[in-house]
Length: 91
Image 1: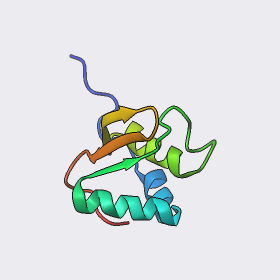
Image 2: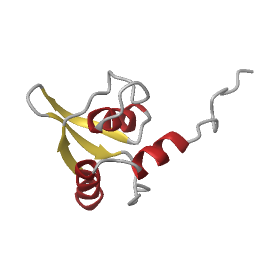
Image 3: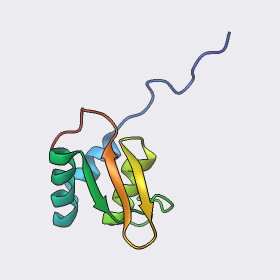
């Protein structure tokens, strides 16, 4: 019988540390996301947050790790992101 190898192996330390040290503009948008469940931001899910630490790659980290879902993508402005679950809280 096959078992799920990666279940319960994720540690969110990188996400936690990144949220704590985030830029003020990220924190403002993140607070708006928590309050309204949706925010329009520029995101870079194709770039590693570890290699290039900035607001766009932090949004990308949250998308890639499953915390956020892109509900609409536009070339000009980025993405509308919705909280993936109801456990999102202020950092």
